[in-house]
Length: 404
Image (cartoon, rainbow, N blue to C red):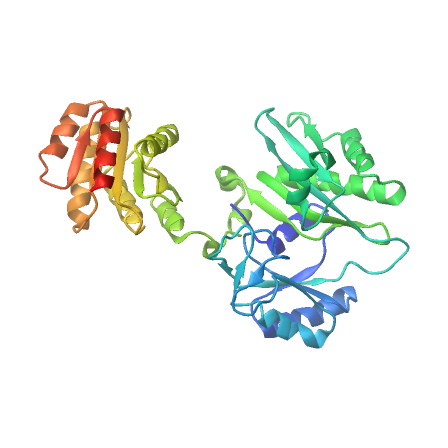
């Protein structure tokens, strides 16, 4: 589960991570009020206004309607309302949103932290995530923080520092110090970075997150280390023990079909193809998507109905898949282990009749307990539903359906 920058910063602050202070607003007037409060709290006289969407690249992104960037600087209090108004309600297009962009419902009005002092401010990159290959957490850092970090990773991978953390042992002091040294820091800045890394790792573990990304991490001109941005991805499977974090979910930022699927207990991810998939089991779903590609089609979605599939879940799956206008055929691929194939077949028939006007062919491949009985139910239903037993047969039927 993704959360907004302003939410992520509050989470980090709770673990002792120093952040760029800010106040969220949902209207130009509220943005002006936020700037007044921020001035009283921090003394800042310049204000950074940031669009709050679940996507990176906001600084280089552009609002379709106004041409404004997704992150802008207001050098006067009087400018905050106008600049926030050019972002709020607009559609922000970034490298991560695609051409359709995302609507901006909130902005974060943040303090200016690039103030003059004894030395020049310096931006770094830092993230913590799970390295599945080693079964360890890994801290990734770079001296080349900022908006071009993707280009740095692609063209200069040697500038990415990596430190693996054994999750059974946790982050050790020498590891935090090593990362700070490799970033070229010394003196007060080094000590502050060690504190920052330690607090950041504690937040990562304490929130059951799958990824933290802070870009940039800023060394201010007076050697403070703070998070200027924050992207946090929480592990959905651990939200049951993080109820306060679960409340941070913003449904407006998620695909409506995925939200609807979640309410029905389905695991659904929309893709760009023309063949809808309905499968019981994630592994079988991946194999089914491969089979669709081999048959000349493209999967339109990933949809796992789970081991307890029945008429209700099948109908919910149908309704979600059929909302995609690109779907030209639906393939149901079920292995009858926990659930019997004849029950799935009856569920398909009942769901088809309940929905009514289904204009795309449906191929049902059943294998396992009572597979033959299930195929017979499908074949004798009189509906535009076709049974298959083998993967090859299912692939051929999908291909035939697409060629019509």
